Structure formats: C-alpha cells, structure tokens
Image (cartoon, rainbow, N blue to C red; front, side, top):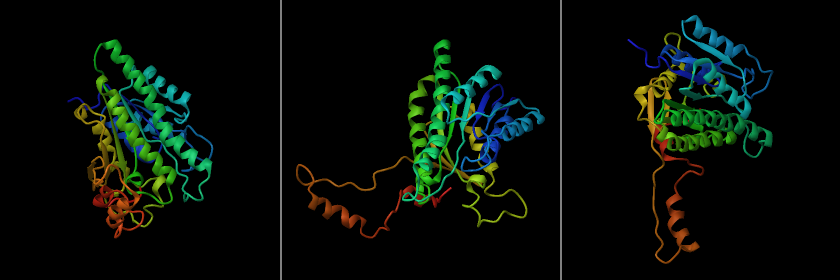
Length: 312
C-alpha cells in the first residue's frame, strides 16, 4: 500500500529541533523526500554561531530510517538563501511539492522596552522568512502549472501562534509576526488556488526550546507521551501536506495534545447605526461606552476566550 506522501518532496524550515524536527520526521514517515532546513544557531533568540549540525542530524535520522533527506543550513530570512533552498529541492528531487514554514526566534520584551533590533529581528525571521520561501515556492508552482497547462500539486503549511489569537503582553514583535503570517497564508491561498496549491496555517502548542519558560510549570508525565510533545502537532502537518487535504485551504488550526480546533474568521460581535447622516462624538459615546463598560481593559478576541487559549 502506497504511503500518503510517496513520490512527493517537502521542505521543512527550522527543522533541526523541536516542532520542525517532528514535522520533518513525520513527512518522511509518510513517504516524502525531505529537505531539512535549519540555520543551526543555538540561542532561541537567534544568537550564537550558525551550525550545520542540527539539520544534518535530522536528515541523517531520516536516511537511517530508510527515507530520503538532505540538509540545508541557510537562513530563510535572507531572500537569496531562500531561493537556494527551493532550488536545492528541485535539483535533488526534481520538484517541490510541500513547503512547511516553521523557522523562528524569540526576543521577548514589553512594547515600551523593546528595541528596534528586537522588533526587526523577529519580524524578519518569522514573517519575512515565511514570505521568502513562499515567494520562490509559488513561482515554482506557477511555472510548472503553465508548462503543464493545468493544476499542479502544491501544499504550504505555515506556523502562526496563539500569541496572535489571545495576545501576549511581552511579545509584541512575535504576536505581530504571527498575525502577519495568517494574513500571508489567506492571501496566498487565494492567489494560488487556480494552480491547485493550498495554503494553511497552524497554531501549535508544544514544549520546545522556544516555549520552555511558557510551560515550565507543567510537569512532564512519568510515563507515556508528553501532552505537549511536538509529536502531537506533526500528524496535522502531514495531513495538510497530503492529497487528502486538497479542499482544505486558507484555514487556521490550533493543535496540541490530541486536539485540533478549526478557527473561524473574526465575526461581527455588535453593530451600531447612526440615527443621522453620520455619527457624532456624543452618539458614539452613548452607544459604545456602555457596551464596553463591564469588560476588562485589554480583553482580546472572543475566539481566544472560547478555546481557552493562552500564549504559546
């Protein structure tokens, strides 16, 4: 019996550790040939010397298990290196079928204390990194579609976060980048639909190097799989990368510990109409101030409250 991703090739960025590693291993288990991308810096803030070690180790794990994999150690926030990543995939495996964007860093600080560099670095790696790889993958699929005279196989899985949904006081850069990734995903889904390509985003909750302080108070179980293990997230990525998900596009999923939630687009909570040609200050004061009178300051989207989400 053929595996779901047999004959397909995939790129996973930030795949040397944590979520990216689990996703790369899952795609390989499902039959895909995988390009394992990781810049290899040891610090979760993007500090330290870049190293080929993490990417090479995961690629070796896949090969040792009988799969096909190569390592790429470039920085996806660099436009040229992102192009080289897609080019390597095509050179090694003939084409690119699946792109999983996962690479990221953290530089947490309150908005009034954050430096310009702390803002720029996180936006660059997360949001620009997602754009760079998406740009070259999309161009590849468009060219293939034109050559074939019809639709081709293409899947994009992007990594957002609950920090975008529920807010995260000490992560204005990260939350903004993750919100931008959702916008990039829905725009890409619409733009590439005619070529047969899907694009979706996930908000994973997992215990990794990036979230070690977030889940520090949640003890690992003595037996069995940790409910916060990245391995709970990887199967959804495998599904979204598969032919079975051909009609799933432009969607946002929250996933962790045996749970997958499909997040709705924002809905209108309340609507107010002016009784004259246009609103006046006094009329808006009379309508909106009572509406918010009993709400905590800074309360965010209702969807976050319903799901019981928190920073992750």
